[in-house]
Image 1 (tube, rainbow, N blue to C red):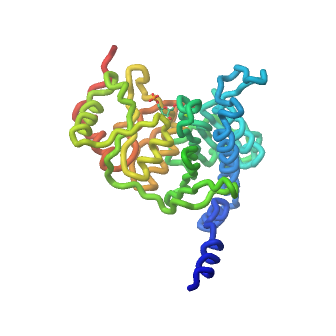
Image 2: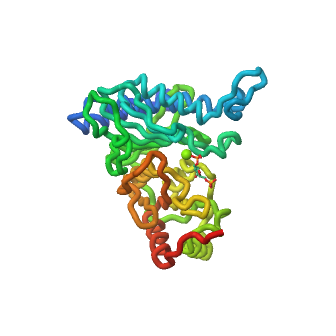
Image 3: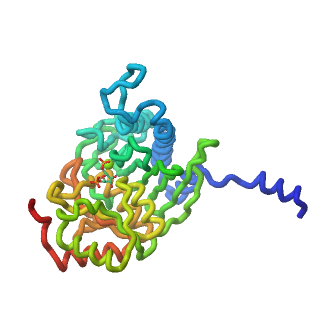
Length: 344
Ligand code: AHM
Ligand code: MG
C-alpha cells in the first residue's frame, strides 16, 4: 500500500461506537423494552456533558466558590455540586422518564412530575466535595430502579428505599484527565470516553472486568486510630506485603482506578461515623452493582451491599469494594478480630 493510501486510511478510520448507538444496540437484548430506560441513560449522559463543561470551566466562572458567596462581578456564586444537582434534576424532569429523583443534595426525594414513567433515579450529582475546588478528579454516581407503586400515581418513599439487587442500571461519570462514563444494565460493564471536539462519549472500555486480586488499597489512613481492629490488622498485612497505597479522596476516581488495575477501596466505620461515611443508595449500591458485574465484590464487612434493605434515604454504610480476593481478606480480618472502633 502506498504512503498516500495509508494516510487516507488513517484519516478516514472509523471514530468508533457512540454511547447513544451502544444504548440502542443494548436495548435489542430486552425485547420487552419500550426505550424508556435508554432515554433515561441518554438524559443522564447529556447532563453529564454539561457538568463536564462546568467542571472544566470551574475556575473561570467562579462556580467553585461557596453557596451564597459573591464572585468578582458581584454575582451570586453557587457550589458546583449544587449546580450539578440542578442540572441532573432538570434533565431527568424534562426527559420525562424518571418519576422520582433522590439526590445527595436533597433532604427528601422529589416527585419529578412524570407519573406515567416507570423509573426512580438515585444519584450523587457531584461526589468528592473536598476535591471540587482544587482541580482534582470528581464524579457523578447514579442508580436506576423500577418503581413499585402503580404507574400513573405519585411516587412514594418505598419506591426509593429498595435494596441494590433491584437496580436495573447504574453507573458513574469520572471527570478526570479525561471524562469517562461507565455503566451497567446487568449485562456486563462498559466504559465510554468523552471526545470533547465531537461532544460524544465513545466506547473505549468494552466488557470491563476487574482483576480477581490486586495490589492497591485505598483508605483514609488518617482515621487509623478510629478503625476497627480488624481493619488495622488488614492494613498491617497490606504494608507487610508491600501493597501500594493510593487515595484520591474521590470515591469515583479511587473506584475507577482500582476497577481497572485491581485493588480495594475501604471506608470502615469510625468513631465519628459509626456507620461509615458513604451513602448506601447513591454511592455504595450503584458501584456495588458495577463491581459485581465486573467480577468483583462489595460488602459492608459482613453483608453483600446489594442485599441491604435501606431504612432511610441518606443511610450510610461501611464499604469494602473491589477485587474479590482482597475484599475476602478484609472480611476475614474483621471476623478474626471482631472489635468495634475504639472510643475516643
Ligand atoms: P461527599 O459525598 O461529601 O463528597 O463524600 C464522599 C467522599 C468520597 O468521594 C470519598 O471517597 C470520601 O468521601 C472521602 O472521605 P474522607 O475525606 O473522610 O477520606
Ligand atoms: Mg458523595
